Image (cartoon, rainbow, N blue to C red; front, side, top):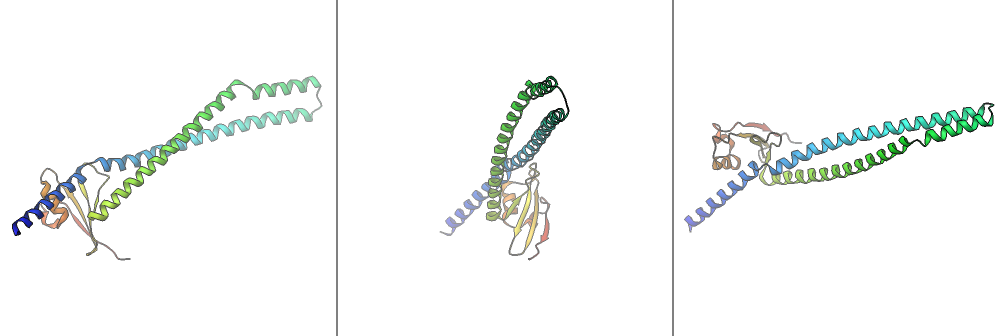
Length: 207
């Protein structure tokens, strides 16, 4: 029975080791989070640029309309003949009904739709970002390991020891370490693998 129990414990440890390595080395979850951050920045910048362009165009049209109204009021305030007043009104009507205004309005409508679509994509990206953050938070809560998401070229991060109020920073050389070595470093004590691991202890401050 003793040998069987040890074998089962060894199998569980090896299985846990394999699962841990897959999580740390599988970049899909990490790539999703990083891509979400990039999409949020890109969409936010693009939406802001479109919004500013639309605002400038609207201000330009408002200035043109105000100028037309000013011409009309000035013409009405002056003593002019009926023919001259009719001519001014006709010019104002033609200027306000020129084809380019319609085209610009249509373009503005297209931009408005585009902004709405980008806003929806931004909302979806934020939802993906929150889901990825919750996944990372759950992983860190269960394993006490916080992986480094900003350097996917290496396996690194921090191990939080709440009992000792310590944070251990780790970085593994994948060419020199086996999967079992990595598991032991994460599950046990990083200091036992100093030839392979760069680590740094940080004392947690109590609040």
